Length: 58
Image (cartoon, rainbow, N blue to C red):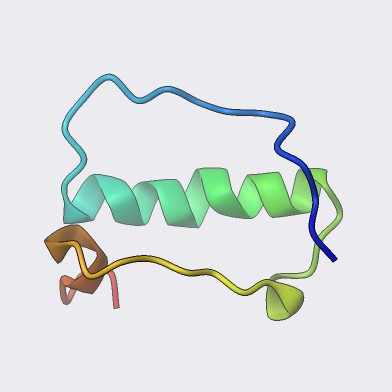
């Protein structure tokens, strides 16, 4: 099942590994809760950008 995008957030600062991790831990998980989605049923895809592959992010 695919859902349409109902909410976007523009980020006006540089995203490093630490900030990216904060987005995943807080905002992404809150979004899943808001839409009553189970994280175990989500396929999350990211590219190999350094902030995505940083030790902090893993």
